[in-house]
Length: 299
Ligand SMILES: Cc1ncc(COP(=O)(O)O)c(C=O)c1O
Image (tube, rainbow, N blue to C red):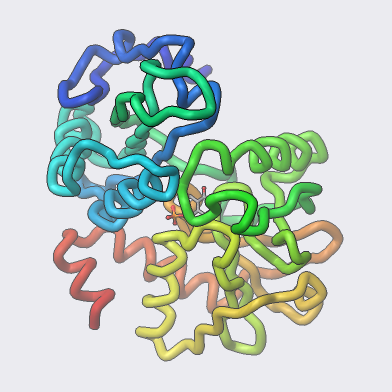
């Protein structure tokens, strides 16, 4: 069955403090966020009615706005509450949650100090980010690179940072791949278009230092899970050539969850013990209550 377009669905969207009917959650075409990419967002997943690591996501949303020079006019407590209210209004227990904040239409030029900052939250079903995730996905190489942090606010989950992701993903899909592996501006391994990457090399877990791309909440969660299992975790600059001595690769992200990778370009991998262990640990963790999640990760 075709999925309905996003502007024509039943339900409610939280919009600047109120739940409004889904189809009425509109904005003007002369919105700063649309013209100048002054928008930041989050991608969260709810499992069994709990939003996994909600406060981490809310804090990143607030910080993403600050990195673009604006303050979201709601506290972290209010944003958490709004996410949970929107989830409750959706009637869904397992769902994807998308808060987005943007500059409005009071000014429309590069300068935007007097724009109102808006916040909206939508919830929908998004069962799996990749088809046949468990079998392992194939990635092509992206032509675009993650930019130097001196040229873009790369630590912000800002809408503008996704242009090169869309271009890279379109090329990969046209070539028959599920997603694209992106290099950093320096030519080191970076991440996929919407998830971080991990490599298993001789029993240890290696992941690129997130100095020009998003330091994912799933990434940090997986690192903590690995350490709990006494698996050595190494965060460092990784050269793409090192994939030739890598046994396993997987992606980690809120939407992608833990996704085994069986191919990057011409290289093939077989998902093995490390991927399976962390995939299962992650799946068990997301089903725990929020306080059990935090105490498990702190332990
Ligand atoms: C570009 C990019 N990198 C990494 C991630 C993973 O981040 P997180 O685990 O916080 O969802 C995401 C997803 O939000 C993303 O869009």
